[in-house]
Length: 122
Length: 238
Image (spheres, rainbow over the protein chains, first blue to last red):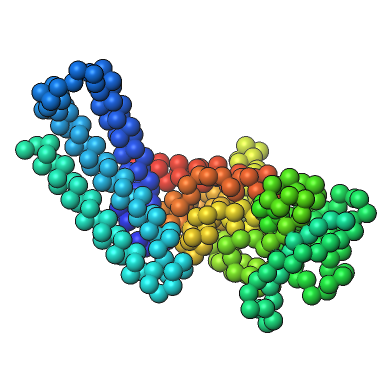
């Protein structure tokens, strides 16, 4: 058993499951929004676009999509950082670089999350 | 004459590894790669590689032949050349991702440490029966495709996840063995075995690219076994 305190859920299974579920949510979201754009793209006005995202369904769905982006990205970036930014690959500076990368990723994703929710619900 | 490009490294003499180009007369025969190595060693006894059974059973002579891992003793020259890298030259390198001790001999300590982690032996806390623990033919059949692993390390050393994290990712070979005991009806440590695998590295670093399946000289399917472990963890954890 390998301890990993910075992984998303701490358990390999939960990270794996969140990665899959968030992937499905994002696919569904892009299909729904994509279909709307394909159907209305040519004559789409700002009012129609705004009204589309004003519905409770789209607000909830968009929030789920934002949460999915954050979770999916964190798990993916964390995996990349623990593959390549390691002491094994880079010597002593590996841990410092990995933690810095993870901290920067966390800041970006947290900002994205708060900003997204603010846009959707304000 | 067969052109051979050989990975050479003797840490007592060489500053760094290098590729040595040699030519060898195979008398037009499609020899096994191990036979080529034997001929080369007869010319240059300093060449180091592991070998034992010479028939694909012991798993000693795993190496990288023209870009693909395999057993030298059961790989004909013609098959190695088909692997794509090297053209008409037989290119022999040690298995990738583990430290080289000398020439084609690698240090397999990390590989064995991962194997040891999965407790590759039956655990059964119930009193031993007078003769033996019986299995039905169906229960026994579940071990087919698992018990045949010869620990040659061709699969694990073909896996990028194992290259990056050989100390934390069990690797395809170890996980095949882990499932061999999870699937065994006589083993009673399923819960403990699964608990020890449920972290972000041991099993879940497998991204299913199936390099392991592609190179296994015994035709085994570690990716499928890893999928079974994942399903067992899913059943247990949800």
